[in-house]
Length: 385
Ligand SMILES: Cc1cc2nc3c(=O)[nH]c(=O)nc-3n(C[C@H](O)[C@H](O)[C@H](O)COP(=O)(O)OP(=O)(O)OC[C@H]3O[C@@H](n4cnc5c(N)ncnc54)[C@H](O)[C@@H]3O)c2cc1C
Image 1 (spheres, rainbow, N blue to C red):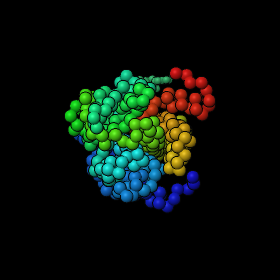
Image 2 (image 1 turned 90 degrees about the horizontal axis):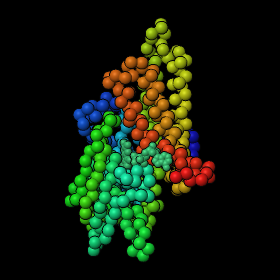
Image 3 (image 1 turned 45 degrees about the vertical axis):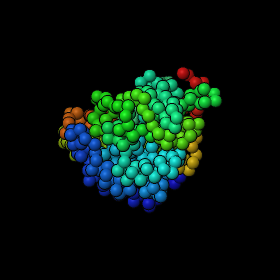
Image 4 (image 1 turned 45 degrees about the horizontal axis):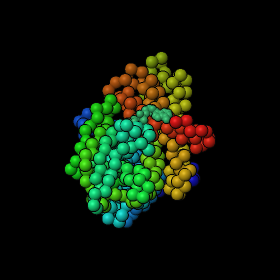
C-alpha cells in the first residue's frame, strides 16, 4: 500500500467530486423532504461507472476493487451525498454474486448493479437474534426443486426501491441435521413476501424495513453458491460492508469539518473570526486528525481485502468501521457546536446529520461487537458473551 494515491485513483476522486458536488447536500435534503430516493445522482453516478467500479469488467463493472468503491462513497459523502445503498447493492450483493453466483446469476444481476439500474438490498438482521446472527431463525426448506422460506427480518435498508433482497436463511444439513446459513436472491414482488417501513427518527430517504416471509417459494436457482460455504460467502460481503460503512462515515466527517471550517473562518463576534479562538480551532483540528486516522485504517482494510488477505482485512475492516463512526460523530458534534445556534437550524442541516452519523455506531455491526471482536481476536482475551 502506497501512501501516495495513484493517478487513476486521484482522477476518480476528482470525477466523483464533480458529479456528486454538482448535487450537494441541498439536493440530498430536498430528496429527504420530498420522501424520495436520490435517483438522479444515483443514475448519473451509475452511468459514469462509479457505482460498479469494483465489479468485473465482463459484466459492465470497472474491474477495480473495494478501495475504489470506498473512495467513490467517501468522496460522494464528503460532498453531502451519502449514498447508503452503495454499502449494500454493489459492495455486499455485488461482491457475493461476483464471487459465488452462477454464470446465470451474474449475467442477470451484475450489469444492473454495476450501472445502478438494478438495486439489491441485503437482509440478515432479525428481531430476536439482533447482534447474534448465529441465532437467526429464518429457515429455507427444500420442496422438490424449490426452496420455501419462512421468517422475519428487521432494519433492512432500501427494500421498497430494490429489485430484490439478498436474504440470509438457514438450511438443514441432510446428513447431520445441523442448521447452516445460506443466501437467497428474493425478488421484491415474490408472493408471500411483504415489507413494512419502520418509522425512524433519522432523516434519510432510503427507508428501513421489516420483512415478513410467509411460505415464500423460490426456484432452485435462487440459492447463491453452496449451502455449505455460506459462512465464507457471507464474510465475502460483510467485510466490504464494514469498509464501505467506514467510507461513508469518513466522508460525512469530512463534510461536517469543511462546513465548520468555512463558518468559523468568517463568522465574527469579537472583532475577529471565531476560528481564531483555540477553544474552537483545537477541537476542530483534533476531529480532523481523528477522521484522517480512520481514513487511513479504512484504506488499509480495503487494500488488504483487494489483495486477498481476508483474515487481516476482517480485523482492519472492524477497526476502520469503529474508528470512522466515532470520528464522524465527533466531527459532526463539533461542527454543530462551532455554528452556535445555526448548528441547530434546518437551514444549516447539521443537527439532523448527527442522528444519521450515529447509524455507524450501531450498524452494520455495533461498536460493542467490534470491541468484543478486537478483545478476543486481536488481544487474545476470553470471549465474554
Ligand atoms: C439505519 C440502520 C440500517 C440498517 N441496515 C441493515 C440492513 O440493510 N441489513 C441488515 O441485515 N441489517 C441492517 N441493520 C441492522 C443492524 O445491523 C443492527 O441494528 C445491529 O447489528 C444491532 O442489532 P440490534 O439492533 O438488534 O441490537 P441488539 O443486538 O439488540 O443490541 C443492543 C445493544 O446491545 C449491545 N450488545 C449486544 N450484544 C452484546 C454483547 N455481547 N456485548 C456487548 N454489547 C452487546 C449492542 O452493541 C447494542 O448496543 C441496520 C440498522 C440500522 C439502525
